[in-house]
Length: 221
Image 1 (cartoon, one colour):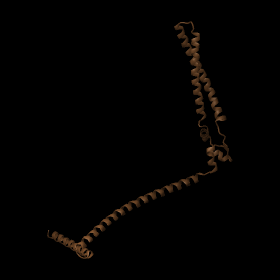
Image 2 (cartoon, rainbow, N blue to C red):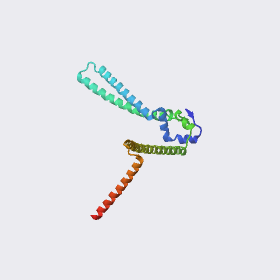
Image 3 (cartoon, rainbow, N blue to C red):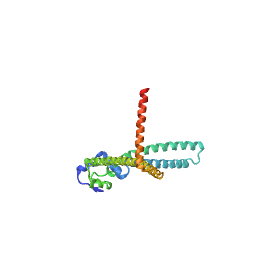
Image 4 (cartoon, helix red, strand yellow):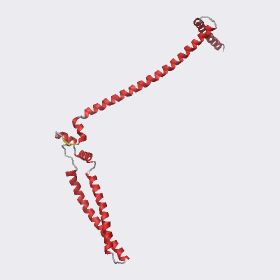
């Protein structure tokens, strides 16, 4: 443990409500918990001892007596044991309350000028609430920027996949054109590009003629 300098910082850090938490942090238990365990142990030991004493008294005092007298003796011994147990528990409860007050004020307490080892970092690197809020805001901005980068990367990957699909379709069209060009040349039909151009023009003319026929048929109807 180590002492801390200013009284003002001590009062802020060690208020009356936080002292119990600070003590529990160091001892790993509260005075109330400690006394509850002591009382529980005392109660268990008292019950065991009284049971043994009762059994021994009945055995010694019941020698040479009839079964009815021994049963009556056992009943009286049990009643005396309960009275004695009640009396001892009541006295120990009063004593435990005084012990708890002493333990809380004298033993299980941390002076207000004492700092626990795990809190040395707070003393070495003090930060006020504004700095903490600033850091939290910066972390939130970084998180949002990271999410935006992830979304942009996913959009680019999707666009790249579309471009790959378009490129594949273009490659198939070029392969088909090359095959047609090779077959055209093999049959000796002249210049493929010029024939292809003439074919495209003929198709356009045919489309125009079909369109005119459809329009004319609609007017007749």
